[in-house]
Image (cartoon, rainbow, N blue to C red; front, side, top):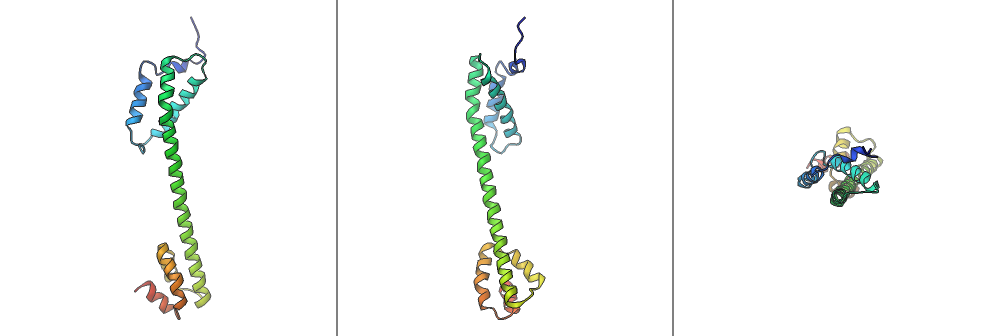
Length: 149
């Protein structure tokens, strides 16, 4: 009786791995557990690659899985980039609100809490407009009127 060095790698023969890849291909990119499933199959393929004697089925599995895994990794990178962009935009908006509030405090002293909260919740375009408009304000009433037309 022959003892296999990696008996666990015999699992998934007879079309099981092919069916698993078929199912993964049919799933939408955002399907829950798709990425985790791809990682598991990819780890299996890496173990298969390490074997000196691969079957034709092993080679086909490795070749078929590689593009799916690569696509999943690229999507993960793209999602990370998008998340980073969104975080950067939000940080920029917060910094702009802080600058406008500091300018108003420099000009008028303490700003009422309700006006400060309104300013902090403005979208970036309105903050930019307020940054210019505050140069024309003579009183906090002007600010209040600008914020609540």
